[in-house]
Amino acid sequence: MSLIITIDGPSASGKTSVARRVAAALGVPFVSSGLLYRGIAYQVLRYHTSPTDARAVLDLLRAHPVRLEPRPEGNRVLANGEDVTAQLHTSAVDAVVSTVARHPEVRAYVKARLAELEPPFVVEGRDMGSAVFPGARFKFYLTASPRVRAQRRARERGEDVAAIEAALRARDEADKAQSQPAPDAVWIDTSAMDLEEVVRAVLERVRT
Ligand code: ADP
Ligand code: CDP
Image 1 (spheres, rainbow, N blue to C red):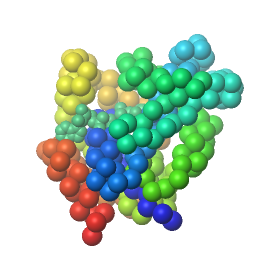
Image 2 (cartoon, helix red, strand yellow):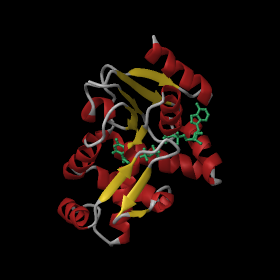
Image 3 (spheres, helix red, strand yellow):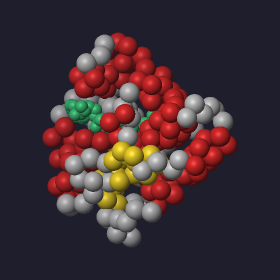
Image 4 (cartoon, rainbow, N blue to C red):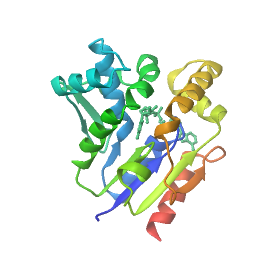
């Protein structure tokens, strides 16, 4: 198999930033699976579909497909062919995405979209190393304490840390079923590391 590196972990553990930098250092694309789930959640909100109704969500995706375009400067999500990437990191999408992502049919849809991509790439998500690319050559699982992760998100969004931490813990809980680390993943607790240190730790293992 051509090179696939998986980087999984909970919200704001650093998956996206680390995957992007590692991919850039290796000169390969990076792929953000969470954006696909966010794109689907966005369509659910846009078309007033029930997030708990798997069949309705699947019908929606058949009528209004969501596609991921991995690009080095940042992945793009196209819904009905329209770029909706800028609308995907909102509290409204955060609130519904775990419910939408829980359906096996939705997970199969995302898996099929990811399987269409040609390696090499660095891919980040919740279950990339365990469920989607179990044969990947290198697998990482990033963690950090809920407080540290909330502080990171608060800096990005300019919102209150305590409120973000509560929402983040709720999403951790809601995502539990779909967030299995691969048994052969290397764990990195990033709580006391800066971004560059995490990137270096990943690259050291990939390059040796
Ligand atoms: P995820 O994709 O896991 O949700 P992100 O990559 O979006 O996480 O990171 C969330 C925020 O935290 C970003 O603003 C990012 O720059 C910052 N960040 C990520 N890793 C670290 C780190 N090790 N130290 C400090 N800030 C970090
Ligand atoms: O960046 P953050 O970790 O907050 O979220 P994300 O990676 O964009 O993922 C958004 C949501 O999609 C998660 O909360 C999960 O519900 C879902 N997801 C998933 O179920 N499986 C994945 N591989 C990636 C994301």
